[in-house]
Image 1 (spheres, rainbow, N blue to C red):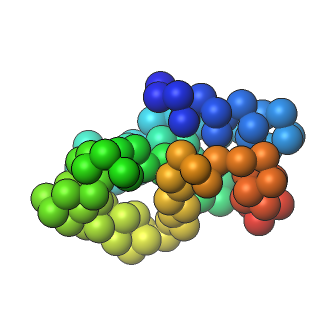
Image 2 (spheres, rainbow, N blue to C red):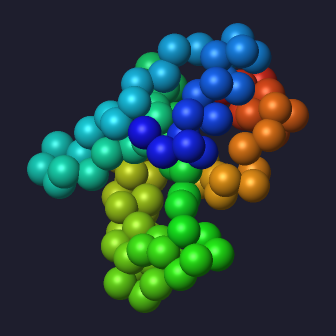
Length: 100
């Protein structure tokens, strides 16, 4: 688990969020996983890394593959929240918990 994922989970837990599944495989045939998922409500939380360093998620191929993954998730009825490390603050995580 990356440092931003640990930070998200720490805030989520301290703020009383419902139980999440880590690395949930959501697609029937693809190996895609969500960083965190609340199965009952089909809500997923993806922590995006490499935002400013030219990481996989911001380069052409990786960005395209992520768009396919998230679109397929939405077709299957999932709500997907994408968070950058800078978004992981107690107030923002609290808003996500309230929305869930």
